Length: 171
Length: 105
View 1 (spheres, rainbow over the protein chains, first blue to last red):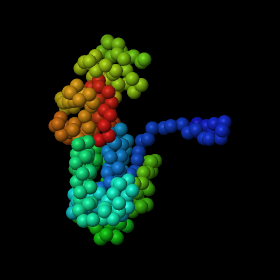
View 2: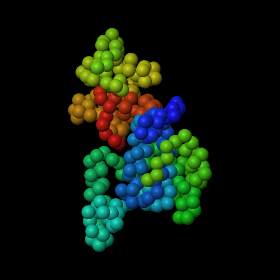
View 3: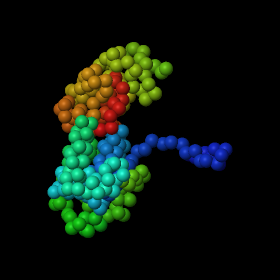
């Protein structure tokens, strides 16, 4: 079978013609430091490539855009085998603060900004930033609780509308 | 090997159109490269970015991150994206005659 975009190879595997990505919608759903950064780096990177970008924060990911919380996100030191810290030790007081401090130092050296500065920077690149309505209702938050870069609180339906034609990336 | 002719000079370029040798660059070449990217006129602000990109490359062997670019060239992020609408780091690097920056930020 051959269409304009897809060919089937002799072994039956479809070969899709690659097309440049023009638009991405990135969802950030978790609130630990190491869960928020990948989405932010991908959003900023997309804008650097000239890709249209929407950032959508939901559930605990909203900590990254709540004024009173966004400067104090922590690295999670329990339940993460890749940290190579036994869970019992990771749960001791001060472990998370220590890991957070180390990670922040490493990131500063790589020129990765703190969350607040990063959100400002990404918004300045022209990316749109949205908060999830269901989560805002659940955590009793309104626009006054968010940093000024948040454009609007939107529903899931509106998110899909705004993501028309975009690649959706869930983190 | 791909070559192109800019400002009456034959220059080697890579697959994406970046100059292979940044020492062959001149301001006239920059103007023609900008034209190819849809930037019809290079203002003082464009030059501030282009000159900073070249300085960074000559000192460190890589183009700057956007964060460094905005902090040290004095051109804020918003303006940077207005000056070079489709991806400032890449476009400005191309116009500056240096390779595409390898950083992620």
